[in-house]
Length: 286
Image (cartoon, rainbow, N blue to C red):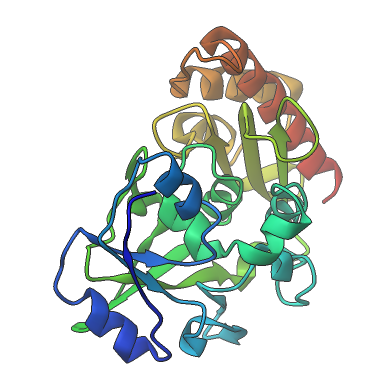
């Protein structure tokens, strides 16, 4: 690794001041589970890292104004035990298969989002749950839909002088009439990068699907919502015909690649299979 300067601010104000130069050579550092790998591989070569582990304002989980607000420095392990977070089933399932216990203890939700890997485990569940992201800079805070945050592989809407401050999870997305599910397909059970991941969220009204969201990971340049597939199901009776068509369209909406781990054809086929399975599972558990 090339040499770099490590800053360790203790307050949010100091952390923002360290980034205020809007200098791309300065990068925030969360748990470091992605950043250190990228540094060793020379994918990123910052001159300055701003470590956030001591900034308490970025920690904490609370119910605020109709949503659950999760500080960006909340670890993946905390998702598995915090009472306000464990009911978000898709997110809980993603946290359960995130790397290994050591990485879950260190890795943060803000770091996983900020890395913007197309295969990031928590990203499809967060998209399916209609999460919003709070970004903070020395000049103020702005909030945007997480679906608008991802621009491409490792590219986001975060400005160089901003930090990911928190994630907002709507509480009405977690009512008895709704259900979310997640599945990650990998080459092994632990420490696996996703070949395909699928998260769904369903809201039921009688025998009809009142609302639905389908999110896909590792099959496009960025995590994405399968919005054409959603439209096929929204407001319709839950039927085998509608389910098959939605799964087929979801597979068409993605744009996977061939690599050493799987072919594009295989990934597209698995999107079809697991979209259908997750929708069935969510409906059956309502």
